[in-house]
Amino acid sequence: MKPLLLAGALLLAACGADPTAVNATKVALTAAETAATIYVQLPLCPQPTGRLCSDASVSAQIKTADQVAYDGVKSMSDGKLSAADASALVARLVTLIPVKK
Image (cartoon, rainbow, N blue to C red; front, side):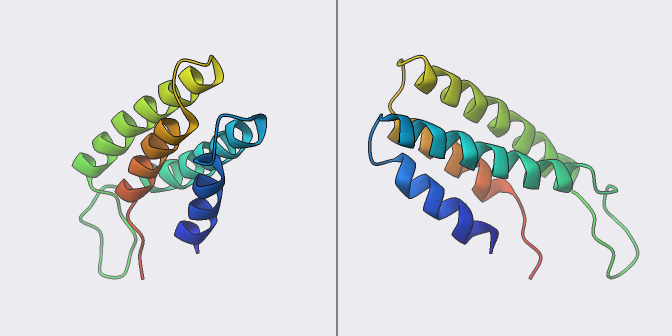
């Protein structure tokens, strides 16, 4: 479900640099950061079978991508980066967050 919600916001954000696109990109970043925070705060792997856990190297990648996405959205808000480019940075963050199926 997470990918569907974020995909919709990212698609809208990529449409242009209008205020709607800026806001949609900010919403997408907030949603991605929420999911990322939940993952990073899980106990480190390995855990007993069936328990959710986070991989330290994945958490480090998420933290780096989050900062890059945040900086991109800030640059977009300042008119220094297109909404499409900022959305791509948020999408990169989303792809790093593991999803348990």
